[in-house]
Image (cartoon, rainbow, N blue to C red; front, side):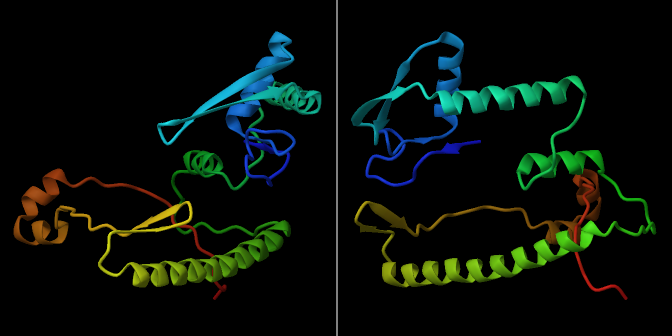
Length: 200
């Protein structure tokens, strides 16, 4: 969770009015609401050798928002109401734990609002393909610039392309040559695969 007040400025995240209050800042403001303090200091060590500090003033607007969110959250806890699903990993884990297995050969008619969700899913997939291609193109060109070098520097960014040695077990070979050993140590893991396709 984060509350973004402004995203511009050379010292964004620490200096008003270009302050960006993220997880730590949210807790800081909440502590101010509990203690009544008018402000608090934030200290950071950048790169292990650069010390910086800033004074964060009390923000009544954000504190009021936090108290309202806290009240809504506690009401849901008291009524045993789960929060609405969103795109977070927590929601994905929750829905997976709630419905871990499917009943074979079962099929239902979905409500009409499912059509809008399918459109949202398809549009996101198209954007993901485009953005993935853009990311891969940039990565490929940067790798070409690096060549056999392990790292490259530009402005305040360091790009690395390191050789990493990994040792993995060839499960197919073990299964073929030592099926009993493979069966003894193999673990069955159940999961549900989500897909959207044209109805036949």
